[in-house]
Image (cartoon, rainbow, N blue to C red; front, top):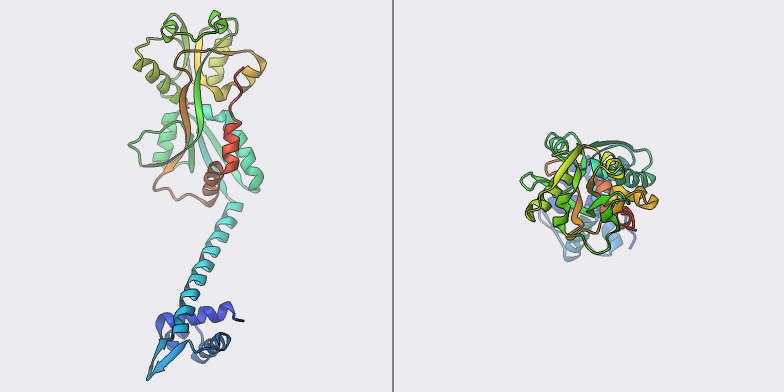
Length: 308
Ligand code: PGA
């Protein structure tokens, strides 16, 4: 059957209105032009699509079938149009991503891989603490956020996408680094800990973990930087609790040791988050889909160093 999209579009309008006049008005065409196209479609079908009774027209059996297909094809065309518009949008534009301090260790790697698929995009990457991330979400100051678990009372769309194990680190010279069997949690009460600031996700998770087990830790230096914790621990100023994601280089170089402590690692997840009311720009939706797709999952699984 040889037919054109134009014939289908005109037919769909006539069938919807059951009127050549109204279809012609809707499509800004003359009525004879519409009738002629519909007649050609009837010729192609080899059957009449409309019956006429007095001034009114009705769909024939064939007309009803044709109408159902014409509508579906029309919807598909519209969807195609939207997808193309989205892709055009996703080819350009700017992605505002805000990430928790700890997530910077892998966020740049993920952005680099994503940007290879979306040339011409510009990015802003804000690295900040948990409290600021929540403020940014509340004030619509960012598109997407990567953070530990956000509070449940906020109206957010939250997608977990990768594990975030928290481990206890020590200098390789520390006596506990040489202990092969599991270190009892209680033993940690004898140590001093270099810790993250109070609003940090790592600190909150660590305090909850020890609190629930009634372990009282002694804290020494408090810092907003994982790098400072690592340097301080390496220098022998105490133990630390950090995400395994931050330890790639140190574990490779053997400058820090992950302790085998009872109950560890504390298993958390990273989440991709945005406000439920937020209208995400096409590039942000593309980033979401990327992180949830096979490539994103693969990247996630390679973001953890091998413990040695
Ligand atoms: P943080 O967040 O860098 O603020 O500790 C990470 C997390 O929530 O695990």
